[in-house]
Figure 1 (tube, rainbow, N blue to C red):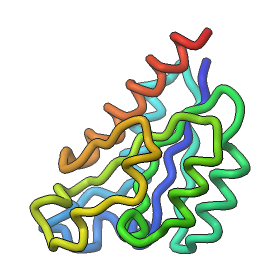
Figure 2 (figure 1 turned 90 degrees about the vertical axis):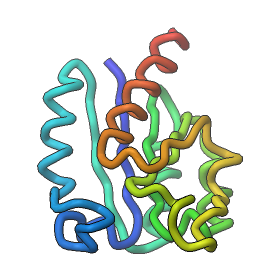
Figure 3 (figure 1 turned 180 degrees about the vertical axis):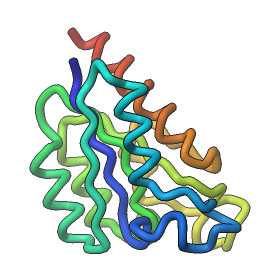
Figure 4 (figure 1 turned 45 degrees about the vertical axis):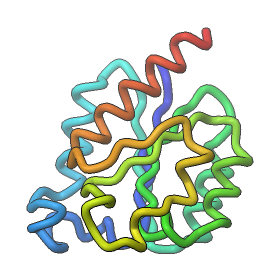
Length: 145
């Protein structure tokens, strides 16, 4: 049994209401309940914050031990060296996820400070990207045994 932490950054608390033409009409909390059922043999945790410091504190708190982290840092992906440093400082593997295809959007979204310190990135596959990231992390964690 593994622990997987799904961490969402700024404005992702508005999923289902925020720009549905980009992010869809589904609320993340409902999707997370489905994820817990899909990966019932494991412990999934969810944390969301609009605060960069709270995200960093959470990563420091959970980022050691037999855990994996799925991180959608939202706009902090493109701006936060501090968040990238936090990912680099922890032992847990981190997969960067974005619901929309950031490369088909504004040019400032094309650069990720997180990508170089993550084990991988999943971009533009909607909520399915989270499920793929969880499965990948479970595979990694099982091979570490």
